Image 1 (tube, helix red, strand yellow):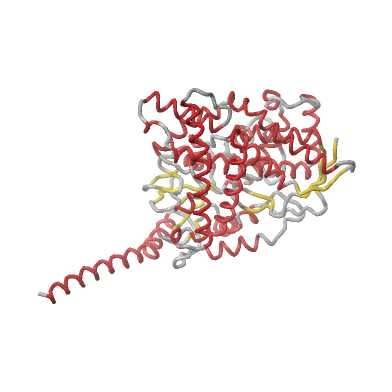
Image 2 (cartoon, rainbow, N blue to C red):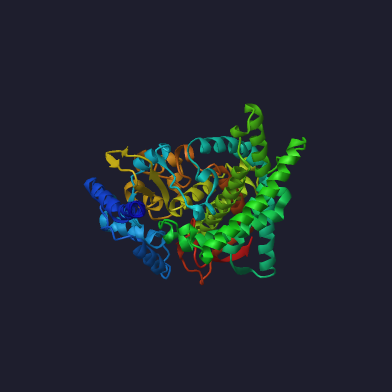
Length: 517
């Protein structure tokens, strides 16, 4: 009897171990090889799958090497430095190519028509699911799917209506004015002065987000920004380990710091949100900033439907506040700094923008309606977004899906290398890699060849960035005030080194010579 029980226990244990080994073998070898065969049958090409790590080793090395190179003479053909491996694979295998993030194949889609289809069919082509480390940085409606995304998007929409943004312009002006004053003091009695403007622009956009999101808790807002900035720096270091199952549970120094920062961020925001909810419940208005508008809209949703599930939970409100910081600070800062750098490289456009600006405003404080009437600045900003966009978007397939003539099996990820699309001569003409804002003279729909929209700086379709108008308003205001007060040119010490962070950043700063007007 004892032998029989021991035998059964051994058999069960052996079966479990065998099952686990089979699953591991399937994950690390059998499934990747099967998917590779299916992709090649669909006309895709790429490196053969390498056990466990795929292309990640080569990807890491190419990115490391790219950071040591400068782009000289200055050029806007930057993809080989910003996304070197994607650029290399597309050159080697053509547009229908795939890469390996560990055992996961990722197909590159660069046809604007297919990109629009993917972004429109968001219920099928979803945001890739993140592990706990990824969620410590990326959060909110930016990663939600299905009904949860719809609920949060609907609740947050009122905070981004144009009439609400108009009311935030004075807060943005205060932040911009503080930076302008600081620059004028730096120049003092000199005719001109050289500064690395990148830290100041980052400080400006974090200042704007702090004022417009947490106006009554401004210092807490600054603390959140510092922690999120640290999170971004850490996450870029550990990104290449994300495909390893269970990696987020490994107690490395980076992982522990990501988790402790996330806990602190959530505690600070939670305290601010609770105070704001209490104020609104006793009838005291507190909707002068993004958080107030979000909390107010959320309470209305709950009151209208009579149950809490119709509104956002406290955790979802916290996630949206984190997203305001990440998206609002990072993307707007890079848009402003690249616009300044490109206006230095193309001084004729700097003069065109300034001339129009003085015709509309003179030396007066820029106002909302007049800012939106600045055609030259509008074209310039859009051209900068074309040449220096968020370079990659990612999607995952939840079931076998047809895309054009392609059948995409489940388990395949989709990469949308937007920067390659934005600089493709097929869609933008022979000057695709050159700075030519006039291509946007008749709007986005007429900017690319054959009137085929090939412009995706804020994504596309139902999941177009909710903060698009906020970012454009802030960028235009900052640039208008800078152009009113200074002329600027690149310093001889400036080196053109665009590098991939969350967005495209100037790796070695932005050394610019300012001259007071």
